[in-house]
Length: 204
Image (cartoon, rainbow, N blue to C red; front, side, top):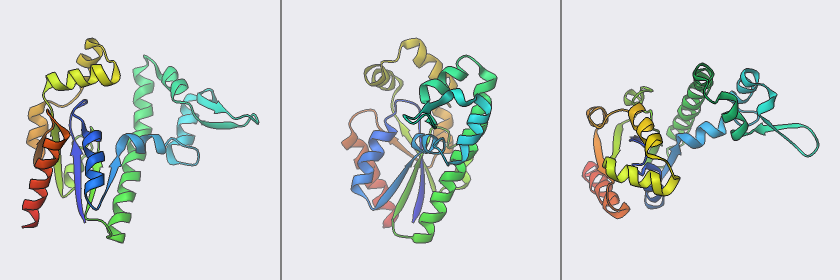
């Protein structure tokens, strides 16, 4: 099994591309955003720590009156415009997410039933995955294309997009740290062709 980390800026189309890859190869894809949601669920590592930090007010109330799952909106309101609190939340979520992903990697390596395990996250480089994965891929799309996608798909304003782009690694940093670049500025089909050629060349 080959472990491949997949990263790139917001709006590059990582998730859409990897969804197609999932249907095409004998592989599994771990989406870090999904993992970050999973580790917040009741009984999972981050749940109790987040409730302790932010209070029971962030929880949904079940029909029988018992406390339920963490409510995303309530949690967002609790940390709104509080950078210190946001950092504390991230200090809980990031390690829990990384531990969960590392468990998945260990389990899949032990089973050895798939050809590729893809791990997708915006912060793979920052979190040191370069030393863990067999290859690190950069999903690239031009800034113009990314801006258009973020406006059309998520309704983001120019100001919000500016803030997000400023907070992320530059294209140069992504390219410098990654082993393979997929240009996803045009169609999914064109990007998949690049992946096909790359993986085929590795087999030969």
